[in-house]
Length: 244
Image (cartoon, rainbow, N blue to C red; front, side, top):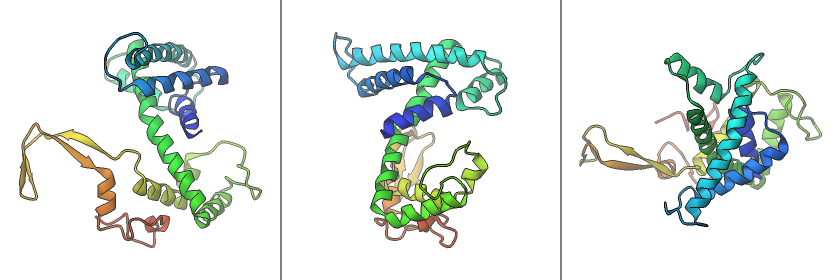
């Protein structure tokens, strides 16, 4: 369910597409097939994972092209810019119109970047809130105080505004603590641009180095009781998350 929610958010909020619910459900199923086979061995045999991934990508791009064309024709009257709008405008500012293929590739990359990591973080958030009812109740109190949650527990009607979300300081602390304990991405790779030394070891230019986000969070001296879920560590009254 978290994956479905994240996909819908990426399509409608990040990209600004208005896709009918039935078509959106079909695109989600196709996208899952694409993700499941994206790292398959590049062997184009019939019924192979690679072939299924390629077919899913082609189907996705057809659906995305239709949504992109509709979006380009309906740009009047908007009072906001989504990520795809910014991508298109940025290319125009640099004197280059993006081709339809570039738009489709860029759109798919944006969905891919937002999908798995956000779904993972959302699932971890739900799990921790269920395990820590005091945190959940404190979070509900903040949402009620800002008019986002009614006393009965139902969300309010209307549009959420950025300035309202920016005022949810405890929610910010909760999300930061979830990301500290359960990083959606454990680490990454970078190419060394210039030879340097680290703890007496020389790292040559051109080498690939790996950094671990998870290990950094577990071993950083700035955090106390690293295995304890404690959103208040990021609050104004404490220095954790501000030092270092």
